[in-house]
Length: 349
Image 1 (cartoon, helix red, strand yellow):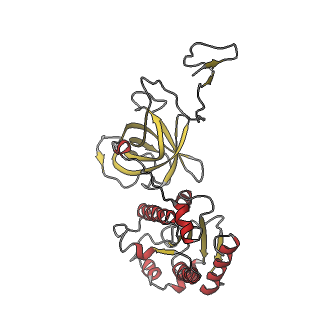
Image 2 (image 1 turned 180 degrees about the vertical axis):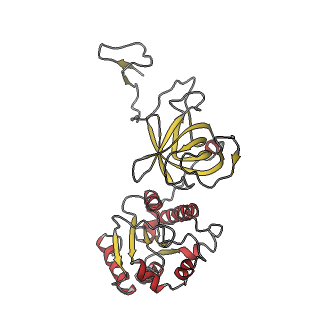
Image 3 (image 1 turned 45 degrees about the vertical axis):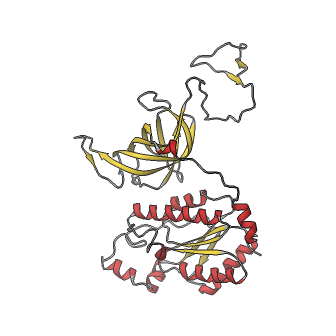
């Protein structure tokens, strides 16, 4: 640091509470939210923490769902990866929990999209206390304390590779992307996605289709259909799709994916223009009449719990890139409409 500016002139040193401008000797990329610390006592940085969290929203906290975390002047993307236990405020008893409801207190593992400078809350409340903000509504939904950094945040690092997405895509002579089909069960997602893949394959594109039912036979066979399991289902699929895009592929995903938050998470994993949301829009009564797997009948009889459209919500896309009304379009016409839209966007020739 070469100078400390103030309105009244330069200073030799500055203390807490003063408004100053710092001039660095070297050109350093510093922006709002960054932390300056001494060489002899550098700030700790980490991207995974144990936290104590108070949940403040009517909708429960679900592990795997992304939120915005505000820590001091820093804002990052944060996901609760695990709820270690919930604390009974009356008895202080620790109980197992898969979610936190309104006013619940839990000890949770928190993962961030990048490392932040921090202190444990017991040492410094300014750099150890945080709030969680809903990414869709900007409402504050939780508040917490950083207890300590998890050891794995210090021991795991990104490995540099020389061949990247650009080179892999150039080798395949195509632009990688995710075609994300969403809609009610029976809307036609899998049928249309399969037809689109056939058409892409016929013109020499390199593709892979991730189908909701097929993935649950392997990668996600341990997951059920609660809201928490649906969130984790889409989180895993989103990460797999991201890896496949990095491999240069055009990825088609056919999942109900009922929540906007998780679809937004999938979009945010990719570069601009690589995520194409395709809303396969069919009225519930039409989807229920089709009922190709007999699932609606089971749900109506009470034999199938947490079924989207019956006793579990579906949050329709607000501005999808492609909107198909499949009560009016045949699967073949819907597939042709998608191919046409991809050409117009320059994703395929």
